[in-house]
Image (cartoon, rainbow, N blue to C red; front, side, top):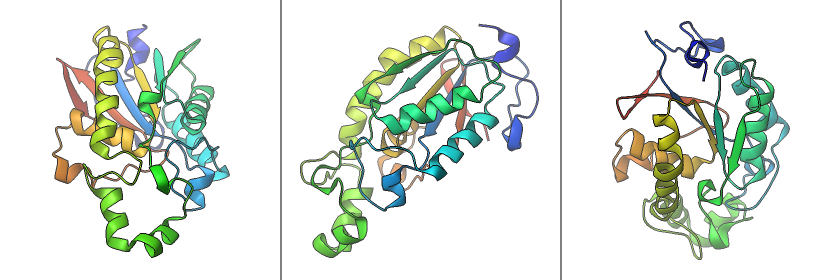
Length: 222
C-alpha cells in the first residue's frame, strides 16, 4: 500500500476532514444509497432491490468525497444495492486500482421476516404503531420470522473480527458498503455504544463514516 495515498494530510472534498500527522489505516463504513423500496417506504430487509436515482446520486457524492483515499479492499453484503454503491464509489476514486470486492450475506441488512415488502404505514395500521416501533427500534425483539438487531450482530460481528480486522492490522484501507442495521451492529462495537443507545443511532444513506485504526482502536473522524 502506498502510505502517501492512504491518509491525505488535507481536507477531503465536501468537508470530510482527515486530521492525521502520519499514515494509518482507515475504515470507511457507508450505508447504501437510497433504494427504490426506501423511496417507496417499504420494509426491504433481504429483498434484492436496486438503487433509486437519488441513491445513485448519493453514491456518486460519497465517491467524490472519498476519491483521494487509496482503498485496498472492499467488503459488501450479498445485496445489489450495497454492491452497486461500492461500485459507484470506486468509479469515482482517483487513487485505487484493481480493488478486490468481497461479498458476503453476513453483512446483509437484518431480515424483516413477514414485514418484508410491506408498506411501513400499512404495517402500523395492521399491527399498531407501538408494536412496529418495537420491531424496528428494539435491540432484541424480532418481527415475525425475522431478525432483531441482536441477531444481526451475531452474524456481522464474527465476520468483522474474522475477515476485516486482520486486514486493518496489515495496514489496509477498507471500505464496507452495507446496510443500516448491519452497520449499526458494527458501530456498536467500534464506538462501544450500549444496547439502549444503539437503536437510536441513525445511519443515513450514502454518508461515509470514517474511522482511523490506531493501536487496535477505532477513532471516529469528525
